[in-house]
Image 1: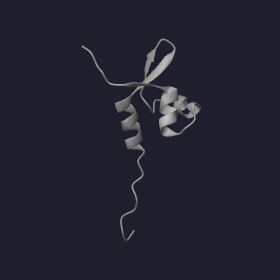
Image 2: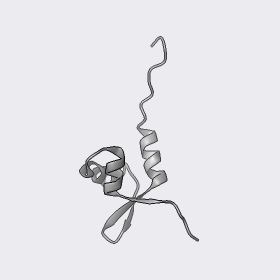
Image 3: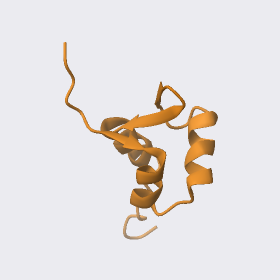
Image 4: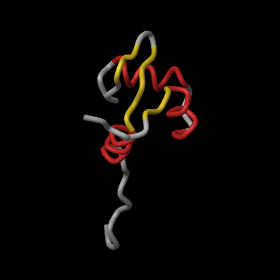
Length: 65
């Protein structure tokens, strides 16, 4: 069974989210962002990053609110 889903390094997640790598490490360490540990590296599935960001999406207030 193969899975061709892209895996991102924490530094790539940081660059994409424009957040410090230390913040990304915190999200992983606290379980907010799922990761795979391969050797000493944590890798993040692209779908897990999308889910993480979707959960934090801020919706603008509706008209009249």
